[in-house]
Image (tube, rainbow, N blue to C red; front, side, top):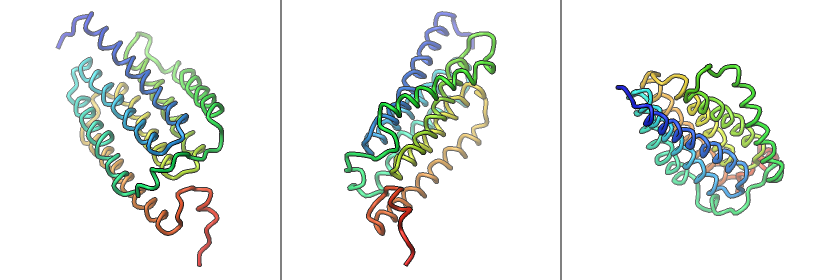
Length: 226
């Protein structure tokens, strides 16, 4: 399918806007200190990831990417949050503050540094001509790095799990531009694995909360076997 230049440019700009919003959600995961807010930001991040897949599906005329968008929207924006809310007790989400290693301004500066570092890392890998890879690859790598930072900086189990899922979102955000014709079987397997990970972590966190009365990782390390 031949896409008019004006329409191609518009969709490319929309994908760039989606990439910017995706990166903002990464910073949002760093800045927020409420567990429920972290989950809501992750849902928004997954929606923007699906949006980028839809835009790239149009640009590349790829039904694989369209399927990736649908799977992401259904699995990560609907089913996965429902699983985490269903498996983990409400009083865990009701906590207002999430303890973390650094304060919010310091965390945001570190996240900004990781985002800038991502752009420098991928610069030699970018194609000579402008393409969606220019947006998705650095944004996705930044999401991967910031997700890893969320895991290391948070002291609560649930935000750490969301950090793991955010890392997967970052990898996929870059991947949809690099490999637009990736086998649908691979995408289904990745989506299924993500749901299984969320299920296992949800059950584990719920079990720990029942027996230890806390989901704070620092407190769990002090527990002794009877």
